[in-house]
Amino acid sequence: MAEKTKDTLFIDMKYVILYRKLGYEEIAPDIFTYDYPDTKITIFSEQQRFEYLGRSYPLFAYKDFAILECVDRLLKKRYPSGCVCLNDCGYDIAVKLPDGQLYLGIFAEGWGKNYQTLLKQFKRKGTGNECLYTSQLSGGLVDFKSKLYIGNEVFSAGVFERRASIYPKEFYNQTSEGDFPKEFVVEYGELLKYTGSDKFVTVPEGIKRIGTGAFWANTNIERVVLPQGLDCICGDAFVYCENLKFINIPSTVTEMGDDPFAGCLDIQIDNQSPHFINDEGVLFDSTKKFLIHYTAAKEQEEYTIPESVTWIGKHSFYKCCNLKLVVITQNVKFMGNNAFSDCRNIRLKNLSPYFQYTGGVLYDKNATTCMHYSMGSGVKVVKLLETVRTIGRNCFWNCDMIEKIVIPASVRQIGYNPFANCKNVVLENHSPYYKVQNGILYDASLRELVYCPPKAAEGKKVVIAETVENIGRSAFTGCDTLKRIILPKGLKFISRSAFSGCTALKEIHIPSGVEDIADWCFSGCISLEKIFMPEHIVIKQNTLKGCAAEVIKI
Image (tube, rainbow, N blue to C red):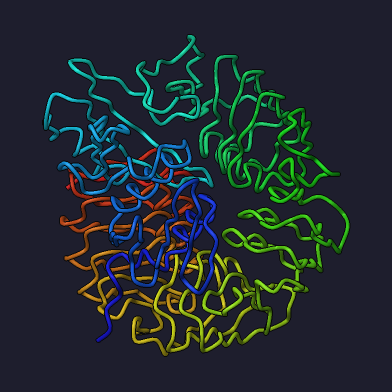
């Protein structure tokens, strides 16, 4: 039985995007490189490693990616490569002075729980400067955190920030500026969440960053005024705010993540920032190389990507139902996570040598990654090319016109359930890395349930394989006739949005061994009356959004 590589990070589209965000060029299939002022780093993603200063380092775990990103950050700040050493002096990264003396010893770790564990367990190695570091790609921007031990003092900033000089002598602690209204959840100047329900929202001065998903799916807001002094609007900041009609981009905004306005169907953007261009409802960066957002309400049926564009951003054409044809021009090199998701009438014309478009499906130039299916193509039986190794996340999202998808033997990685809400699909699998059982797609080991097509749950009691430990993201999304499901005793994790939109589901029993239930898991389960779950499970903010079920702890 075939097993996927640990976490399959080397062909996870998220990490390909990370390489691209850092500026790496793909010089051959799965080989990426970047030329720094005095050295070069080459990533061999197929082999899960990178080469730096003549030595090879692993890219297996999230920690490894944090190390790579940290080195990238230091080299771009023009630290000499000979002074940025890996696995030296007992540290993950040792930053040395030009005379060879240690300036800063860095321990890196993956974002989230792993970093929190590092913070709790860390003990000083010496009396010199030491640092704990983590980073992640979120919403199209790279976030990082650091904790600096300088002598007998502890700081949170001063080394890695854009304004920090190399070998700095002054460090500081980030603080939250201002006393903000309670509906604005702010940390260190970043608006993490707006919890209010006003139609007209004025974001207070002193907020420097609108965080990822800060206004996620807030259908009350119609007008937002952002303050001068704002630096950044993160990816998905206003995603699914369907009634948002107006927003301004202040002149001080210099950074923007993946389409912050995806799902804002008829939004007017008043751009005052010289770092962006709003061309009749199409938002670009100032060079017009990056296409960020195309306003869904635009009436035209055809659109040609400007010749200047090299990158089409994630979800940038989301729900553009008026569009019937988009021409991908010759200079487009990369495309974010399904840029044309939920465009129900669209088909593409590809002029770029960096992609292939055939049978209604857009692939990368080597046809190793399936990136998008065109809903307006008329293709109902999708036979993916025999070269495909990765089916990218969301690439078949909501494609209810598809009757069958044939997964070839070459496929080794399927991104976060790309088939969610394909209500009429049947999956035919030939990959040794996956298995279809009773119509449900599992990994080959039957430890992860990847996707249950609505047809496989129609009019049935669904019994999941006893070996399953994880129910994948959006695994049952759109199974609107599912009334009953039996979860296996060995289940440990239920991923984000796993049962979202299961409108007929009435009752569910969560096994005692489940360690975590992710956000949005039962969102929109309007008929769900009772959820029996272990006492230790913490219910997240949006786990039960749009669901009035009684939670009974057992």
